[in-house]
Length: 232
Ligand code: SAM
Image 1 (tube, protein in one colour):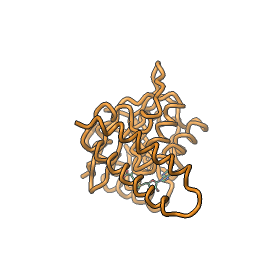
Image 2 (tube, helix red, strand yellow):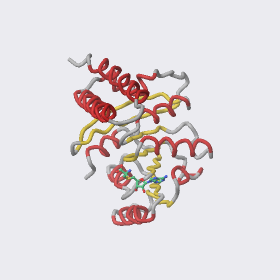
Image 3 (cartoon, protein in one colour):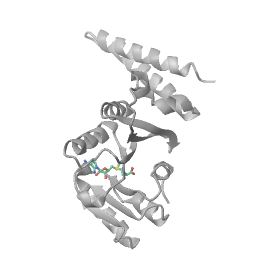
């Protein structure tokens, strides 16, 4: 049984993809998708030995060694040309780490540029969207959900003929999430305002010159409140 978060990621993986799940941990996602018969080939990549062994165990336990290859590798180095990967999932890490994994794969050409990316950053969505924008990706779907009192965003991206220039605001809030305006989206950003206000209060009490940082936070709060003012 997948978590709500991973189940939603799985729904966003196209049917019959050849999937690389990077940072797969127990390989729960590829195992579930193959058992659902949504996929029949996947690579589960892990850089840490413990989770790599857990992934191997999970694949063997489900008798899926013919369909799922588990590799001990850093990021997209888990992908080999003969895998003919068409979709990549990178989930449950910070957005900056996901960005760095994509960037390394872009540089060493493990990432071809035609794979569908389904990314689930725990934090740091903005630097991830910045990278996608600079590298010519279009954000084709986004979702936001809550599970165990945590709010997660999912970003689906692909490189398409026409390039989209996302604004700073779209890269912060998510171009599609901004349009969807779901209750969870508003809940997240109310929380983000509260967090920034708490930091501001601390900085106001701190010694030394906090002016620049405080002005930046005030600017961010104003931008967020502008978006929150659309809440019905
Ligand atoms: N993807 C699963 C999920 O969403 O539930 C597991 C998330 S777990 C919190 C993050 C996993 O990413 C860890 O098992 C960690 O070892 C792995 N990881 C971190 N950096 C990595 C990298 N550069 N390459 C491959 N795996 C990595």
